[in-house]
Image 1 (cartoon, helix red, strand yellow):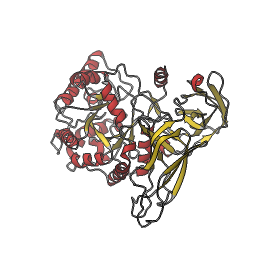
Image 2: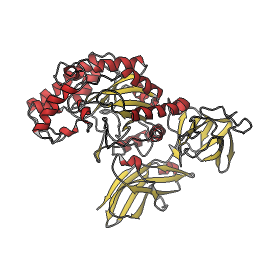
Image 3: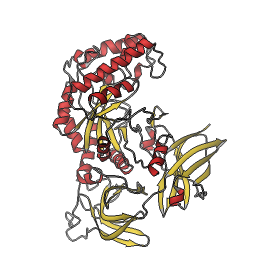
Image 4: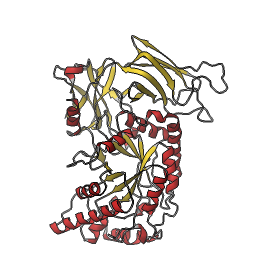
Length: 543
């Protein structure tokens, strides 16, 4: 029953991928031939590395998209001149793969061809490829070998959209206004089929395929026919882009997110996320049942920018300590309580991940109360990475980890006792492992964020508890804040809260909020046995 409810949520727009502030539903695939064991592999996989690279990296601009609406002069020089100077001679896939593995990545997805149509392999379908540059070699072959040698799974990104194909056929370059006749449509599909065949037959076993754009059905059909064990992500499962779902999802999903604001290397006007932000994104994705596909963009010479490498190494430090909390885990009955996110290893092992730890000093004891977990006769706790017996330079300090079950909840008491940075200021989340623990309730409220109605400066927000007859949470409210766009959401201000409201007998509830004109994101929340459970994020506009 509840699997059906989840599916209803997913296929009525609960999770979206957003591009250029336009909401794009990524659930519209006509079929999915992924094998269950391959989707289970993804659910066990905390993270992958995404690599966006293209011939226009030389210009430090958006990957491919500058061709839409470009002048004839720009377009001609793009396709004819840029390949003559593209030489990623410093591309070292071995170093990248080894770094990715240290950072907890289990697979790497490389852009075999982005929308511009430039191919990173020795294709027979077009001259617009890596072998017709000063680099000359098949770069994709080098990537595949290095990734496999590192023990990681091999993933290909492939765009069926091909601006070079359109250019050669004298068709205006566009992503959504193509008017192809029947013969050209057939030729376009055949072109993509032949390219997919090359990718599927020339590089051995391919583990993951990320299809970005249309016509994708020919690509899917060809890939599954030639490699039945391949996992197709975008094109078959949920891939919300540059954002994470607001609520826990039971189906397999991944979020591709950039390490900065751009997919490809952008030397100026770029803003990188901090290592702590990236770690937080990984934790949040895992707590909601998904995987993080973190994107980097090599410089034109093929090397990673220092800023990108540095952040991956910070992630590597955190992962080395806390890998248990993100590998082979599932969601807890709720994804979080306040600033503590949860993952679990069944049966009975819970990881409480304390997110706001930057001001938690070494040697300081902190206490936490969990409302969604309760102790058993065999419960024990520890802090990942440390033995909780001794602290450097403070041999007499009590750094033991302990717990107590009270009527108020499961009380945890732990000390941050491991030195990670020279200055003793490691800012990243601390993970408390709780073994042999049980959930307070077996089923959490399924909170659906409804549509909003606006009039003048008032927004009426609606929500619903889909399983209200079974769980009956006590009250509900809405969180809201200004919406600045898909990338800015990751830097958004704190949520504001509407007053609590009563939930009706059918599970519905609503609230009104007075707001100045502008765009806002909001979500419904409900309180179940003192635990706040959040619904999906939505956007409203007050004109």
